[in-house]
Amino acid sequence: MRTSVRRALNNALDMQSNESLGDPGRIHQEGMTARALLENARAQVASFLSAKQREIVFTSGATESITAATWGAVRRSVENGSTPHIVLSAVEHSAVRRSSQLFATAFEGSVSIIGVDETGRINIDEFIEALTPTTSIAHVQWGNHEVGTLQPVAELAAACNERGILIHVDASQAVGHVSVRPKEFGIDLLSFSGHKFGGPSGIGGLWIRQGLRIEPLLTGGEQERARRAGLENVPAAVALGTLVADLDDAALAAETSSARNLLATALERLTTTPGISLLGPVDADQRLPHLMCLAVEGVEPQGVVLGLDRRGIALHSGSSCASEGLEPSPVLEAMGVDAQRSLRVSVGHDTTIDDINALCKELPLVVGELRSLNA
Image (cartoon, rainbow, N blue to C red; front, side, top):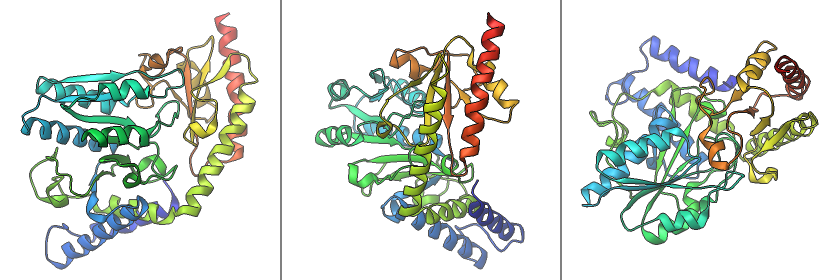
């Protein structure tokens, strides 16, 4: 978590603990103070996305936002008398895949899974061909969570718009790392998480295009303009607002450039080790700036992760949300590459060249030790 974000979060928590910060749905002083802070944070997030304040719904994170978008679209179809149909790519995050299958099945609908090429890029023609008059929603990532592949969001959004089909973009790996302005792309729904770019965990958002009405996933109270029930997490929202306010265009561009340079250095040095190669697009401009995926031949990735952990270096193996599991990565399987042996390398706002130097020194040593044991 960034220093300014932690400070803002602590200040808001202090206000909450001394009871000067109340329920933003109340009209007493404590409630109105909370309301002012909450709406200021909403305005900051909206400005960051070049959006309108009323288009931002605070959630607990991207998983909830994705599920809410899927549920709302499916319910919209059902209410219009259609059997739900959902289109998504084979490399979508598990939150997209599982919520889509769950809600489509609940209403006897169907899901179309679209293939990708060897770099993880969606097959545009196949995606468009899968769209039908009864399609409830189409999902597409801004950038992949394992290999970093940037997807043709603008082209797919245009195809959906021409057919009057809702399109949701999972931008949880993009917001805070590249410029994301959903309105310019013709998107209907966009999800993101604060912790992915230096904010606190437990806060994220769902951008809903102005004029679009979908049934909320969480019902009960009238919070978030009746779009997400439950007492808002005001301290976390304040921290998120502080984060995006600090991350102006110049700061974002500087962090993007730094991340690209750090990973380029790591890639150049690490791939001199036999059996270590890049998965995904070779062109850095076709990947997210802050993450890459490496294939490591001849060793189990869990052993590499544990070996690096003992040296003070934390990496992922396989799926970004299931690195402790033994199941092969569905993303890499869809790409047609070895889904069992991969490492996901990511850098953040506080990553330095010293960190990269340590990685480039230790990873070949760990891999060499494991290979010698196997031999």
